[in-house]
Length: 337
Image 1 (cartoon, one colour):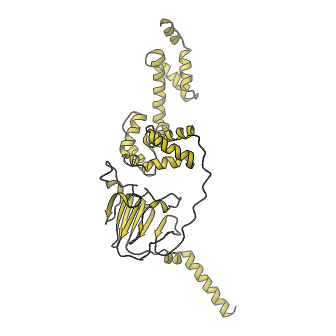
Image 2 (cartoon, helix red, strand yellow):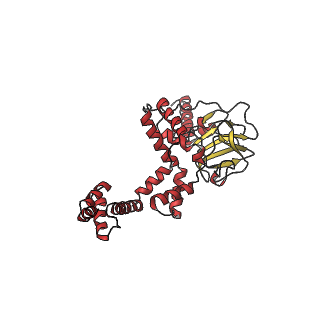
Image 3 (tube, one colour):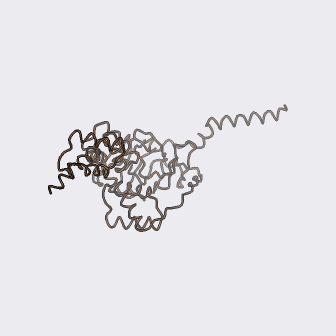
């Protein structure tokens, strides 16, 4: 092989090795030493958003995570490096509650927001500014790094990746939209929608074609939802569904799921589907039918028979009541009235 051809071949192999090893990519995505990194999970875990000193983000809606969801209300821990400091805000446009961060915070759940009725800074950041020695005089653009779990705000210009195509929006009538709004309020806030909220979201569903998922996520970002203390909501769900206080392991498990975006409705539904929840539902269904139709508590033999009807035979509460009403005791009770 001629020496010139051999040299070109060796140069190509060296470039390939450097590219596949990540060396060239590391050169492209290097950021300054003065920076603040925001994480989606406590203890500096999950996806990371690194912002250099001198960069401001007036809304985190424009910065996307790996699943294309915005960074708004997604931050649970903060790491401060170098001489950088950060100021975080609870609303877009550098408004709402604010907090100066000069040292790393491993869990924002332990940092309270004074003006929000006892709420915390966990998943409550909507805009931010990082100060310190400036890297560039122009506003730094946003770029997606090659690593799938890290986003950098860096001074080198690059276009953000195009958003994925959206599915066609669902079409609602005012009546069907009202049903969806009421269902979302129960899911997130465990209450019926107030008249103004009902009108507001019904109009958005009908005119803008929001999905039910978008509606739920918007309610989760509301001040009322973010003021809810997870421990209180989980304890209420345990009392309502299982009739008891949560055990420590259950409380810890559902607090983690709350961090992952679970709603109160989803927690209650999982509790209802648990073995304990199904047992309690069967017991209450049989007891309620006996009290309503026979005016007494269920006897062990009758309870066992109707439990088998509900569990093994897939009967409903209507089937249970029909079976009791077909019995002799019910007929005699009706004759005495």
